[in-house]
Image 1 (spheres, each protein chain N blue to C red):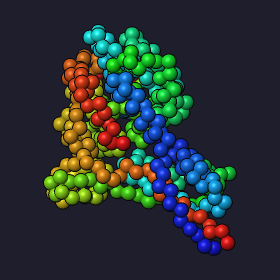
Image 2 (cartoon, chains in turn orange, red):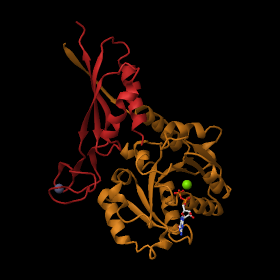
Image 3 (cartoon, each protein chain N blue to C red):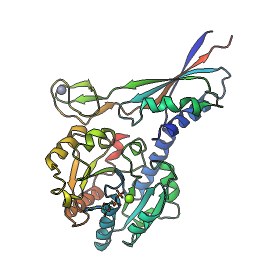
Image 4 (cartoon, chains in turn purple, cyan):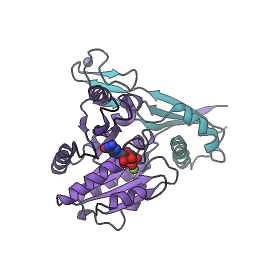
Length: 228
Length: 116
Ligand SMILES: Nc1nc2c(ncn2[C@@H]2O[C@H](COP(=O)(O)OP(=O)(O)O)[C@@H](O)[C@H]2O)c(=O)[nH]1
Ligand SMILES: [Mg+2]
Ligand SMILES: [Zn+2]
């Protein structure tokens, strides 16, 4: 039997990448800053966004959010209490959001009505790293209850992030969390990453977060495009 | 675990690309970067089931693992990394976020049976 090799050179996630690329152009045209938030389940993504949306609204900004979960719309209801437009994406078993789901859930929204769109990804530190959602900024969160070595255990996702947020900082002392070590590990897997320390309970660190959001809205249209 | 959906998109991409060719597909060569977020074992595990009943049925999946390559500004050179836990130049120790290889998830080629 003779055989022959046929070159294909095709990206496996090409379809997702193309859709993400279209979304990114739409977001940029609308002047909308889009952030994709990834973490383990329970890290505090929803709590972080609840406070973020509430404070942004109080300051006169126009945020919106999409929130991905396997099932239920509990998180969307928590976020909608801020008064911001929020939509739930149920993935029914899928462990990550894909660009197509984002496109579908934007239907009927006028993007120009918003200045910032937050996308809470499905709680998972592995799969979301492969799927570009057209975001300008990827934010990876880790809580002080998860251990300082989380970035070393899941380097792929932390490497793909532009910003790291250490959450539940109000519990740091009780957990004997070593912030210096956590920062060192983050810089090891993603040299130069911007790191914030926050508590959604006390509000600590949110001033720095809001200034960062402001500078992102003013400047860098797409930190994340450089990665894809 | 999203390896099954990755395999499904390998199947649909290859099926589409090869739709005009009648030859039997023997092997699919996949390039998998160390930062692609995909694990070889899990890909192999689902391959037989996912290809069943498709033009790829009976073919082998060959996974070519690609290490991360960074550009070190200090050495002005490309450097291959041993793992994905540290992004420092193995020669001079300078950290680098300038990644030149390692995110690939690509169907490189397909081996087919030549028509007699
Ligand atoms: N003490 C404290 N608890 C928090 C904080 N943020 C979240 N939590 C708690 O952690 C749990 C999971 O939070 P949630 O926002 O649902 O996490 P998600 O799965 O990442 O969206 C909830 O019980 C929250 O009340 C925080 O900053 N401090
Ligand atoms: Mg949540
Ligand atoms: Zn060097």
